[in-house]
Amino acid sequence: MLETVPIALLVLVILGLAAAAGTVVVRLFRRQG
Image 1 (cartoon, rainbow, N blue to C red):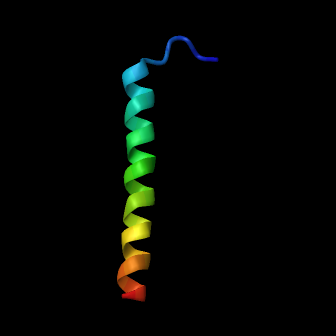
Image 2 (image 1 turned 180 degrees about the vertical axis):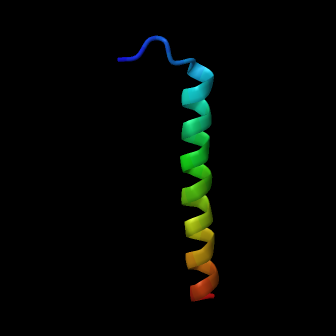
Image 3 (image 1 turned 90 degrees about the horizontal axis):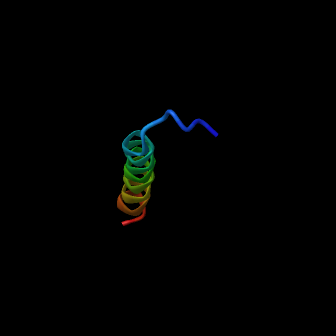
């Protein structure tokens, strides 16, 4: 594991992935609706 990578950077990556997944879900719901 890379111990030199700040935890904040990892958090930002997780938030980015969550935001992307959320956007995809919203688009799917809008298409179905």
